[in-house]
Amino acid sequence: MWSELRALREDVDYGTPPRDGEAVTLTVDGVPVTVAAGSSVMLAAAAAGRPVVKLCATDMLEAFGSCRVCLVEIEGRRGFPASCTTPVEPGMAVRTDTPRLAELRAGVMELYLSDFPAEDVLGGWSELHEVIATTGVSSHRYGPGENHLAAPVDDSNPYFLFDPAKCIVCSRCVRACEEVQGTFALTIQGRGFESKVVASQGEPFLDSECVSCGACVQACPTQSLVEKSLFEGGYRSADPAQA
Image 1 (cartoon, rainbow, N blue to C red):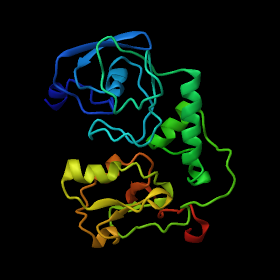
Image 2 (tube, helix red, strand yellow):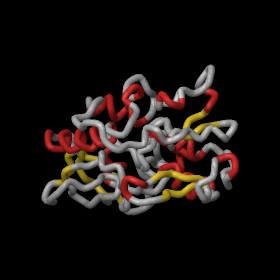
Image 3 (cartoon, one colour):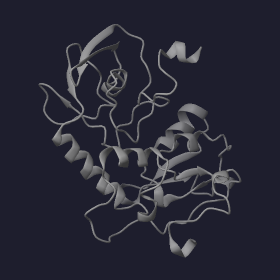
Image 4 (tube, helix red, strand yellow):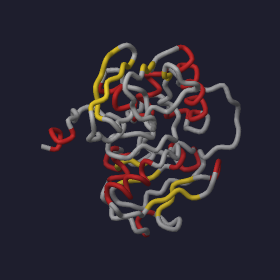
């Protein structure tokens, strides 16, 4: 029933929630597609079979527009808007796969990987790893610099753990805690490079207002929040000092 109400396939993440409005027809990479007014370009692209890579977006949450890998080109418009926060318009002509877009996405991915455990770039199963495979970007050009690789793992919760070294601060866990569960146990603390996900007032997950519902784990696109049961013999931190 839920899939029928949404008019979406359960095995496809359309990036943003469906809308209920007048029919709007546009083209995505030359493919005509009709979606409800108020829908995002990202949803239209997925419906047209031309999905755009994404990290901060999922159709269980409202669009946020922070990861910047879902950029597209729109005929007649300047710049490269985020497809998740751009609403469709009648007659819109969208391009999702051009050399310039590939270049921009590669640059964004390199920045993410410059602060991500190098030994965990390949062989993972997260959405980040899917984007790595799609973009072909698995390394970066930057030398050693400030990073979060030594941030301590929070394994206080009996069911899941939080490894900040793999967090890209996309806010999906925070938004899932608010929009799906309604607990408001997570937040983003700090600004810029100092931004980080914290539970309650910077407490361990077990001591916070977290109710162990798992919404944050389901929403996380990078394996930063992950079930403990997936690791036989315990979790190995990316930081050798914590191994």
